[in-house]
Image (tube, rainbow, N blue to C red; front, side, top):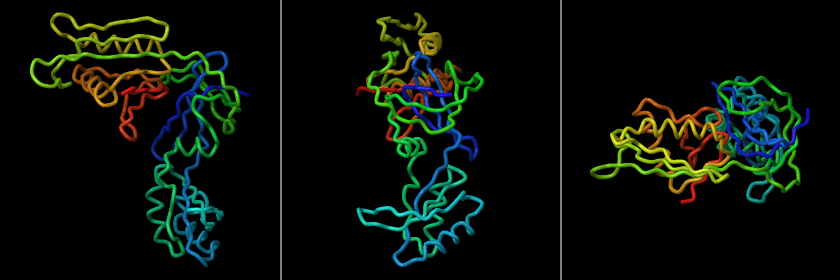
Length: 289
């Protein structure tokens, strides 16, 4: 079946050596949906030295690393504007690209390896010309609901999505929050200092405050905050400075109190990604600081 969806977020899901690309979006009916791509193959390029027999080098790579490589394909590419011959090395395990590239650099005839450090989600976006916050058409098959995922519908991707020119964004649910912690002396520490107040405001105008009692018991504060995010199910969470302080503090404080801050759409906690960005799976996290 054909599905039109607005791409909100993308993440890789890695189990052992298998990798899936999860695309989170909103369909034309306003349903929050998850599309699962199971046919992704990671690859990198081995650029050859001048005058090398490309076929022999490709054969040597396939024979030497047959258990780790799907195929080795001779391609023409450009390196700093100059044409070069390279071998596109497709890997069985998406998590092994950097390790394989390091080994294949020592193969006779290989000058260097490139793009082994491109992350799977970024590779999928680039190769298929996809853009977050844009509409796409895709051929899918509907799958059974998963208890560990918060989505109205789940689909398996049969072929890569195609970007559409529709500029109109769907109506998004946005949630902003801020917290206040208490420490009698020094900077607050999540293992001993409570969260006194968590304030939120939703895109519809609803304001809520989760406030610790007089005994400074903040367990209900954190549980209420987590449950509210799950119930409201925002597409975007907005804060000021949360990537540096709030998310780490809230996660650590939750653990101290025997809780989990598992509000995102994969029922996971906020986790630090590249360049200090904090990822909330299926939800766009925006830090305005």
